[in-house]
Length: 143
View 1 (cartoon, one colour):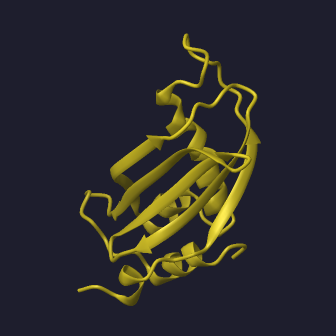
View 2 (tube, one colour):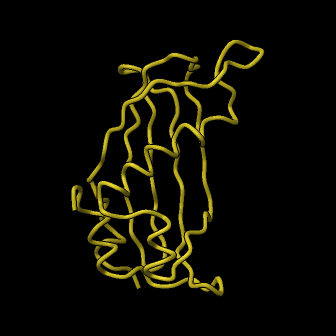
């Protein structure tokens, strides 16, 4: 059964700015394998702004976050020293999972985007309903 949050996109997003500090590969640009590492700090900031960490989910709520799928699409090259902006948002919250969407830009140029579906499970690995207070934190920055 779909809930209201399953059907409507959530529009709360955070913007994280930083400078790429990884070495260019032999082709002179950031290697494709590096993009997940570049997106991760923005996810951590997004969660922290909502009073959450992945450790909190496990220690306080007994939930593990399991990556079900992720897709990174590279639209343009990036280079060491680029000043980038990463926009992070959760655009869908289901019963046991949520969908994270991030986009990386250099000024207005889209460099890459990431879509990731994260399932919350109990300690035995069984998908578990996302507690309402976590759902509300996902939707409210500076909780």
